[in-house]
Image (cartoon, rainbow, N blue to C red; front, top):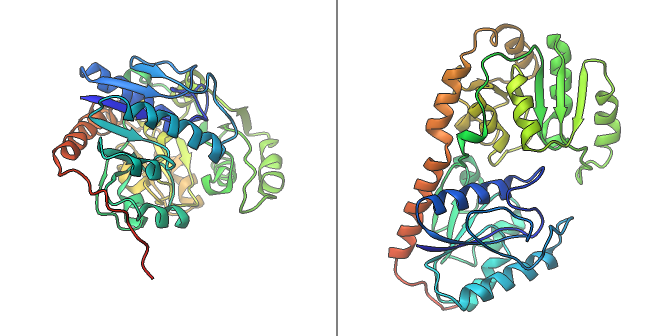
Length: 352
C-alpha cells in the first residue's frame, strides 16, 4: 500500500523529549516500511524515519497553535491530492474538514486525547472517516461514531532493554499536572519509606493555575525526592530500568498512558489507580497492580514488589504491546477501509 502519515508540526518524529503521539507515528512508520509498504511521512524536517519524509516546517513549532497545525495539514493534504495514495492516516483533527475537498483516499484518524466535548461535537460531521480509539475506555467515553475501532499503542521492544535488578526507589514519569497525580506519587513514596525519582516538567494547569506553585514545587524539595526534569528516551529507559515500580495515581480518564507500556516492556511493574485505560493495560500481579487509593499503593510498594517477576512482565508486554501487534491491527484496518464503498460526498447538515 501507498500510505500517507500526517503527524503534528509541534514535535519531531520521533520526539527528542516528550511527545506520545509523535512516538507512535514513528513506530507505525517504521513498522509499515519494514513490511514493504510505500510510506510518506509528513512531519517536521528534523524528523528521523525510514519512510519518505516531506516537511513544511524544518523544525518543530512550539507551543501548539491551531493556525500552524492547519497550515501543515492543508499543505500535506494538497500533496496527497496530487499523488496516488491508497490510505491517508491523520493525527491532527484539522485534517478532517479539509478532507471534504477530496473523494479519495480513505481517511484514518487516531484519537490521541481525552474526551473533549467540542471535539466530540466536531467528529460527528465526518461519518466517512475511519476513527481509531487508543483504548476501550476512551472509545466508551467518546460520542458514538459510525466507523471506529480500538487499537492499543505498540512499541519496538528492542528500544527497551530488560531489567531484572532494580534499585530501591520508585519513579514517576509524566507532565507534572494535577490529572497525572505527581503530588500523590510523592506522598505515597514518603509513606512507603522509599525514594522517588520524578521526571517531567512542571505544568501550569488551566483548571487550577495554582497547582504547580501550591502542590508541586514544595514537594520537589522534599528529601526523599530526586527531581530529574524533562528526560529523553535514553534517560527514561535508564530510570525505568532502575526503579522498583512506576507510580500512576491517575486523577483523570487517561486515554492511554504510553509510559505504562514502556515500563512493562522493561519489566518495571506499574502501580496505578484504576482510571481510564489502566484496567485494560495493567494485568494484576503480572505487569503491575491496580490499587484503589494512596494507602493501598504504599502497601503494594512495601509488600508486593520484592518478588515481582520482571521477566514475565516484559514477556507479557511484548505479547500485548509490541510494534508488530500494533502494525498488524492498522494494516487490517487500512485494508478494511480500502475494501469499503467509496465515501459519500454529500455534506453533513446539522439538525435542529
